[in-house]
Length: 139
Image 1: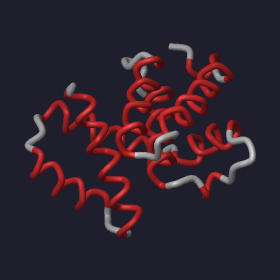
Image 2: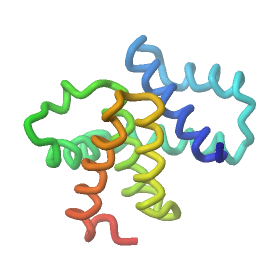
Image 3: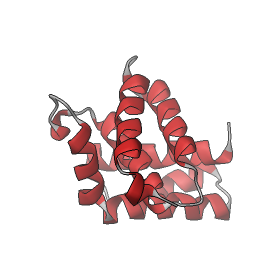
């Protein structure tokens, strides 16, 4: 497993646990990082991704909501919602990561942690966002 994939899994686990248990994400992340023995570079990526997701949550959510057909954003399962936020956040705020990589990584997370159809769902939403927001995502 790539180092970045492990980072993304830790971000997903942190945000999911924080949402479910209503625990401060920073405290939770500190515990998770201690158990995972993450190197400093990866730790910085994890912290940056979480901070960007939380800081730009409304903008990210709006882009996702625009592509949800016949679905209410709040009714998405937590895992899919977090994975979509992660993918959109990477596309918007991490220009060093190719959009295709962000989408592929989100799909893999969904296949591993979501429902059987999660990968296809995440792919469809992120691909639609990438295609319709080329001017925003231009790097």
